[in-house]
Image (cartoon, rainbow, N blue to C red; front, side):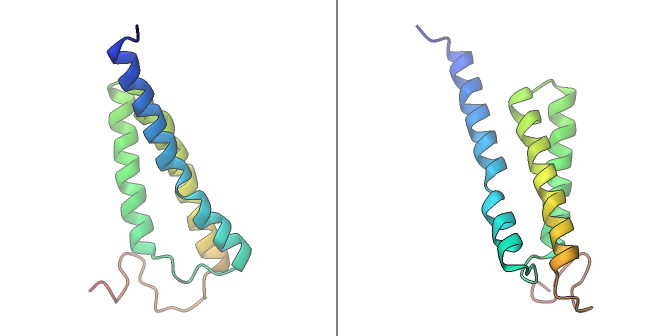
Length: 103
């Protein structure tokens, strides 16, 4: 018989790992096309902030099912930021916090 707590831990790990690998197709596409002009700095900032706060929360409460994938997501967000800086379109119209289309 499976312990219900272990079953939910497995759900947590699978969900966290799934969310972590969701950014892989975007990283691959940017690397393949050498273009990151459609990636918003505002999205990256807000996503990184949210995941960073979740990692702090998970660390404090020792929630490894959130902590481990959260660290992976932060790393993927950092890679996306590096690719955005390296392969971005170079225009100065990108706002650091929000794109004009959102406002």
